[in-house]
Image (cartoon, rainbow, N blue to C red):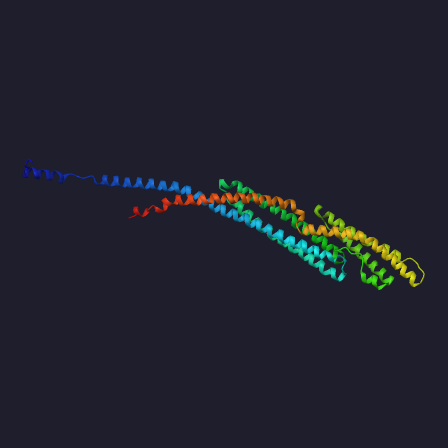
Amino acid sequence: MPAITYRDHLALFNKYKTAKIPYGKVLSALALTLLLTLTATLRLASVNNKEVIPLNDQSIYFESTSGSFYKSKQLISELKTSFQVAGVKTQKIDTLKEASATSRVPGFFITLGDIQKNIDQIKQARENIENEHKTIQDATAPAIYQTLNTQISEYQIQAQSLLDRMEKTLSELKDLHAAATPSFFLPTLSDEQAWQSGDPEEIKNYYKKRKEEAIATQESFVKVKASSELQDYKTLQDSYFTLVVNVADNIIGVLDRPIEDTEDAKSQLKEEAYQVLVGAQRENELIAEQLSGKRVQITSLSNYDDVLASLANKERIIESGLAGGNQIQQAVHKNLKENTSLLSNFDFSAFTK
């Protein structure tokens, strides 16, 4: 190796001592490298996060919407059960149609109270379903659940329409029931106590009073408005008032006939009047049977079978969709976990040290 003299060594030292190293350029290059690395990493994280957020929205929407549907379905189910019980109760009360006036009065008020309870239950159910439907309308449905959103919304709209119809019908039934009064809400033509007394004058006075009450009640009753759904019921009840008036007229007409003042003649006259009542009983039984059937039909929801069947069909379709949605959600949660793994493992603190 050739030897270097001291003079050469000194010259070389002085040369590098006076040279200027570009520290600014070095720092700028380092900063640019770090910035590019951070930008690329954040961009990758943003791409993944954009995938995660919609998946999260889907999950939240699905849980909220399915919950709204099942709440609405439960309300309809509870109403059906309640009305089935009401129908059975109505049948039992209607068996009092040949009972005394004292027994009929409690039946009248029990039935009136039950109708009002059903109306209140319908109003509460409709209000709750309206709130659930508003939840569906206010939510933004992800594209994958647009069909499900429409199906549930239509189901809730149809349920509200049914409840509106039910409330209107029961309100009219309540008005008709109240207008019939305790004396005439169950079809009866006689008071056995009057006939058992054996006094023609007492029997005649009973039917005079009954006729006056029937005419006054009928005049009020026919003024009560009733939709086509209750028109048959109203017509039947009105025919009962007419029957009461006709039977009273016929019995009074028989008892007013002049006869010999003997016990046999009086007994024969009373028997003839009683046969007028017996002849009218068959017609009265038919009216009572038909009225009872109509009342049970209205209070048990059996006249809404077509709408309830349609709702039940929609429930099956929606529940099938929700079952498929559950499978989607399982895939969503798996995908969500995979997409969030990068963000959870990424250490942003390295850039702050």
